[in-house]
Image (tube, rainbow, N blue to C red; front, side):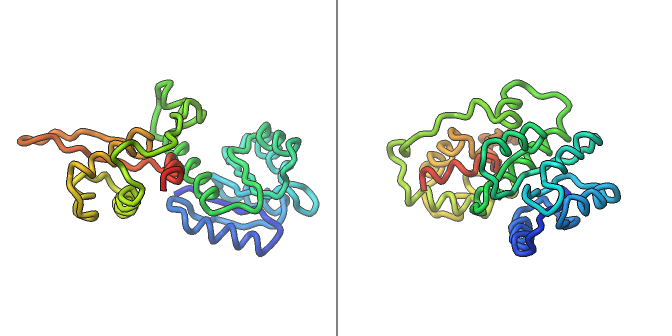
Length: 235
């Protein structure tokens, strides 16, 4: 679990961020602080992986906490959640090491994308000793994103894609086969394969071929949460 601290002086906003955080799997709230000084005291006593950090607070501001983290070589990351939208502060936050920046007000979808992206990067960093250039570009540097297709390929419909997507939401926590989707949706295997192949092309699904002792190979699909946001262009 990724250990999180919320640093926010507004109690209502802090509670709002807490409720959003509870909706995202893989994260646990360790502490909440209403000021930078309070946050520093907690960091000195408790191991924190990620801080959800406001900029505007009484006394020291969020950027001061980022400076503290770097000067003391703390292995703690920060996602800025702030109403500050001026480029000067945004540039400073990114320069001081913020891994993402959310401008208030924001939708849960953007919050979720920030945390899922961080979780995927954290998993990659802690499980892989070496990676290739493609993985580095796509997962860590966010480069070379496949261009978005403006329309669904010929033969695919939005209504059926929605059914497939709803089925995937039930199956996405473990690898699943084409047949698993067929059972939930109730359309032909051939049709389901077309939609799964489309989702593979835009990066939402990764596919592995499992060879059994007899019979044809089984295609196992794995959900890529880092690319989930791409589906909104087609539903």
